[in-house]
Image 1 (cartoon, rainbow over the protein chains, first blue to last red):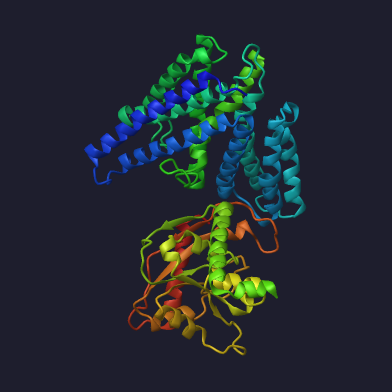
Image 2: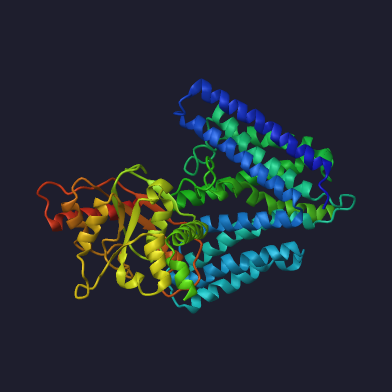
Length: 313
Length: 222
């Protein structure tokens, strides 16, 4: 896989945005809370610092080629699955099915993606894990909360492994005239969806008045949603020249993935509220857990994958 | 023979113990990504007795792992001599890596009084990790009744902070009888320090410390 010059441009553009964000963060800290005592400013700066780390990690994976991207997303899946399964209902009888989720299903899914076995990786979790994992739990014979336990475990696998694996699966799509550049699809998807998250946060902080679902998340507002989705869709459309899409196609796809991304954040917020936690984890300073950052990509990636697979290959 | 000679050289032994300590800490971090929540007390250099619920042999490893390195250096787990001296490897880990205060749980066998041994370690300036239930909790009960050791420590060392620490999820990571650990996230919630109140008797103090530890369970997950 060649690292296309377009990818370099995109990464440099992101670096430029982060430089500006870092300067704004430093300026705000100097103006509003020079002693580091304003929690909003401190959280903003922690988020920006973590963004640098995430962008550098992603860039390294892109440089390492397909193996790098598959391994990075397998590790992200692992971290996400650990966060999800920490919160789900489970019993001792589930020990082997849970171990199987981590150490058998997850590696197998990513291996299938890496060898481009579409017919298998698109059914491994929705069909085989779905049918067989409850059997493993049932054989240990603990009926209490059985449906809740197996359903929550299946959800964890679908969200954290199946959906996330559709990001590296984009590398398998063969688009005529776009050979060797499919890594741009990943970069474009992640850029557009994450920019939408960031701009929803920015628009929401500046103008947010009307919450979309006040019981789920007071910080998700209509103002933030519309501002963020439109800003990111415009940015995604403006990058049409590095994608296989025309300008209107890029705009339409950007709108779809940013709206799916918003839905992802909403659904995952509902799960967090249900389980009584604010964040999925603690390993990304300022952001929370891996799932707090991935939730939008999780919902956008499979839809993006199948639209491209249907219309462009 | 050659190996045992190698192990007895003090400097080498210390280097090996340091390396093994780092490896065990890293492994604990990879498997459980442990998270410390300091709810009511700060991780500062102060002599303390951390007392925690006990569901797994890895409990003290996890507690030791989430302490800042400067504190970790002066913190010694209190562990069962009959378990940790059984094999040379366990003895190396217990004595050299974790510098455990080894106490004998069998009253008929022991040569030194456990509370006196813990008192000596405190007099040397060490902090302690203690499991006041005395045995690993294999029951459905969240927390077994406390043995009296904690009370005697509190009475003999009234100036030392007794810090309750609730360890959650570790019993799910590696239930007894399983061989594959689940890489779930463990949370350790550190609560406000306790001291023996004036005129408080043994039963009251043990009930109060038991309740203080159990209360942390609500905040820190399961």
